[in-house]
Image 1: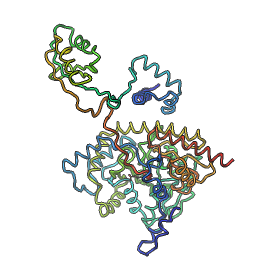
Image 2: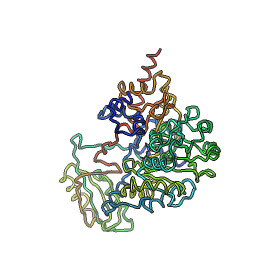
Image 3: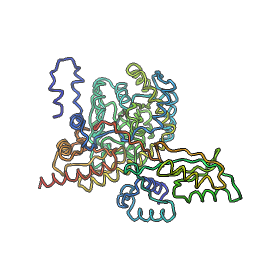
Image 4: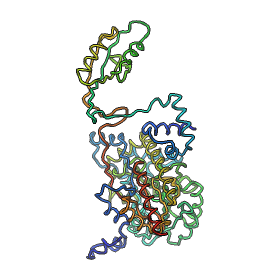
Amino acid sequence: MLGEQITDKKKSGKISKVVQSIPPSGIREFFDLVMGRDDIISLGVGEPDFTTPWHIREACIYSLEKGYTTYTSNQGLAELRELICEEIHQDQRITYSPDSVLITTGVSEASDLAMRAILNPGEEVLVPEPSYVSYKPCISLAGGTPVPMETEREDEFRLTPEQLEKQITPKTRAVILSYPNNPTGAIMEKKHLEELTDAINEHNLIVISDEVYGKLTYNKKHTSITTLNGMKEQTIILNGFSKSHAMTGLRIGYAIAPEEIIDAMNKIHQYTMLCAPITAQMGAIEALQNGNAEMEKMKKEYNRRRRVFVRGLNRIGLDCATPGGAFYAFPSITATGLGSEEFAAQLLTEQQVAAVPGNAFGKSGEGHIRCSYATSLEELKIALERIEQFVEKSLLGRN
Amino acid sequence: MDDYRLRELLEVVEHNPKIPPEELAVMLGMSVEEVIQNIDRLEEQGVIRNYKTVIDWDAVGEEYVYAIIELKVALEDRSGYDTIAKRIAGFPEVRSVHLVSGDHDLSITVRGKSMKDVAFFVAEKIAPLKQIQGTVTHFVLKAYKEDGLILFGDEKPKRLPITP
Ligand SMILES: Cc1ncc(COP(=O)(O)O)c(C=O)c1O
């Protein structure tokens, strides 16, 4: 079961308390079961099935040929930071200076830096759940305390002002927004974000807004909370190229925030990372300059899969909200009477389809599974057939 | 239907002409009638020209030889290149005919059963045409990409099966 691996090992006292306190990832167990088997259709992958577009790979190769193999400034290449400012201006109509941008090794590093730059020991950070697995450990490692806010299917997994206000205490320092959301695919439109700003202002909260899926929305364009009145001063945007340009392995992302915060983040970054890899920075420049067409192509493909897959799930009887962004469907599996870990484990052994149990993304993810549709349409269709057989069987078993 | 969705319909059909209308409808968020009507109309208008099957003849032991042939043309009257181009296009051995810029005029591809086959065809049917001043034949040794289709096999997926 989960956690056994770690608790089994004899504790030698060499590991710090805070690291010991972090539970092992709920995804790990599944990984071990699936690894090395090629009869499995995996809907468990949190990254694009596309390879990085060729023109971006080519730009990376060319930069290596030209001898770009050095450090860059800590903050990252000026040209890249300028392009990022242009892009967010075009996309969201907000103006930032390149001094407000820090290039990082992915959103992962940026999120760690953000927590460490702002948190004092014991301060609380509100984390909407279900959501991406890294926020809580990053908060704990930075000496803070993560406080989950449960989002619900009936609100299409958006964060509501009630859920936000309920968890605010005098110790609350920041709130994470992670929309479009992994694992639910939920998005927050402008009107939904507006409902949160009163509480944010009143309690002077810092907003950490992970917008890594911001380019992958299907019916409504993504709105960054920084576009709302007064929010730019409160917000650290985390973003990157992993999802939008299928560049996960290049490890490249960035943070945009008021200069004071960027300077603080850079202070940590310069001693722990020095700079993001120059090859990836070169690729990111190419992505911003010439990457739109390929990005649109991938997005259209995701959208077609999304329509087919979500409809298929609902037809099978697994209630699934229509995801507005990212590339995940998050169906409820409660109709089968199984818990999400049980469901995922049995689906894997009986039908060779891997999906991630919803509770890996927080307690409120229980009763759901995360299915990534960053997988070919052919595979998705086979997966749907297999899930249907599995669901039918488990429904029969119940009656 | 708006231009954007029409384009998407075409993009999908271009690569997957066999998808049934019911499925296209779900994929594209349209009604089945919309899909059928639009495809009918696009076929009628000649926007969808043809549905093509790409066959790897080598795989069933039918080996073909391909050559790209440059032709220098001397125009003899005012009819321009069309007359000679159409005449050449009429041969079934000829797979494509393009008028091109540069130091030759027409570029054609020819398919035959053997190199001899192709060489004879060029020598007997193309070279003697009175407008043809010269030919240069390039035999195709290996095809890497054709009509936008990469032929050297997909890259193997390198993703781990489960990631957060
Ligand atoms: C919501 C979210 N944020 C951040 C990341 C990590 O992004 P990066 O590759 O930029 O570190 C992921 C990856 O799965 C994610 O889903």
